[in-house]
Image 1 (spheres, one colour):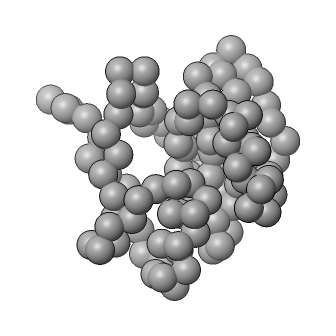
Image 2 (tube, helix red, strand yellow; image 1 turned 30 degrees about the vertical axis):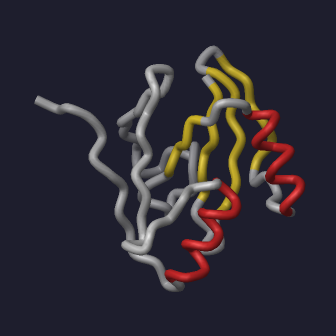
Length: 115
């Protein structure tokens, strides 16, 4: 029944600041309609997963966490360092891949993943 992931939508306190941050930090090309279309390649996966309300994997006051799959995590870390975006947690490596975390200007934890 499900063809694919349709989108992520949320409210923000400062639309211009958030658009600029996601454009500069994550290199998302935010269009005039305040969004972008990410077209996955064959190596991309979208994970849909539930967490218990008190699971410490991401902040309990944050109802949703974004996870972006990246091509090269080391290149991503270099980009973040160059523009002064600190990691919120140290890089982790597991059987699922490599992960880092950053926070957007409104404090949402974002996970970046290389498979």
